[in-house]
Length: 116
Image (tube, rainbow, N blue to C red):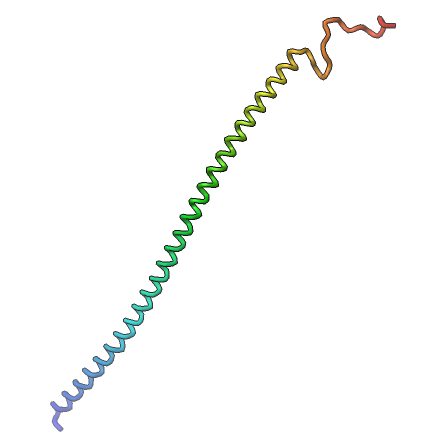
């Protein structure tokens, strides 16, 4: 065998190995790319579902917030009315002359010695 034949044979074997290696690596890369696409698709679907759920929750919280604002307004009106009532009652008490639960009379109080 000539040296050129051996060199050509070695080159051919090396080429076959490179082609085989390229095929193996290509399949591994393709498998990894497919797995990555699958994971990305699952994550995207999951993210879309969570986003939808969060939008629903946001809508529900908006309704609850609106209801609470209405209740707060109602309570503020009630408190304002009660404050007005208290002021009216205080005014009536002061104007009626009742102090400490006793009504002031226009007569001066009698002393205990004068009654005896």
